[in-house]
Length: 162
Image (cartoon, one colour):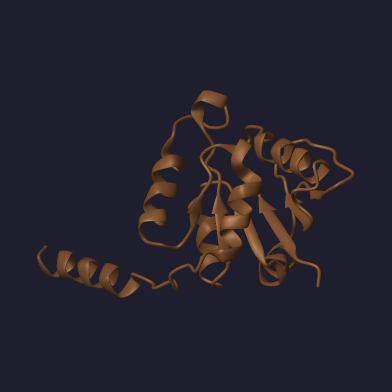
């Protein structure tokens, strides 16, 4: 059985090749054998080992999330939520300011928060990406629970108190 990893780099205008370089190195070293499909966004990267698309239409994007055994994504809330809502095993590599991948380090904070809730595994150092993928295979994520009811209740209370 072939396993599929879907990599989501987001739609930021800044490059984020760090994940792809690490994945390619580990594929060449024989440490990653899964098929890898990437939505790279603005990251320009060529690889004979991974199937890379700049952007996917929503239907294709959602199909790849559905088909994927594992998701590797940047620390964007949308990509994380799209994945955990479908009970996927998710490895998050946050974009970092020190690599000029983002304007600030809010993705680190997002990653830490989703990790504490048990929804995802973090990968703070891409040198460890192969071992983190192995850890992900054994990971049992928490089932996603929407907080919408609580949010609606707080909004209603706010409105009632106006």
